[in-house]
Amino acid sequence: MKAFVDKTGCICCGLCTSICPVVFDIGEDGRAFVLVDNIPEGSYDLALDAQKSCPASVISIE
Image (cartoon, rainbow, N blue to C red; front, side, top):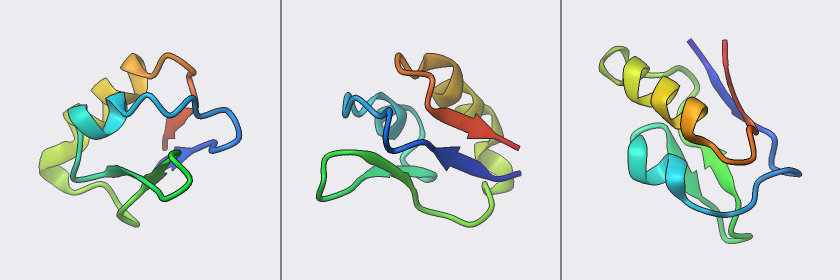
């Protein structure tokens, strides 16, 4: 599984990083980005929680 963040729509709330810091982080521009190429096996549920919780709906998981 891979995670993606549409940085153009990110509102810089940091919720994704607080839910799943293994997959998401905040860049110098204040917007979220994905740290890993593939979501680690033990982090699938947290990554999906971050996707569902994103108030701007800019996270996708494939």
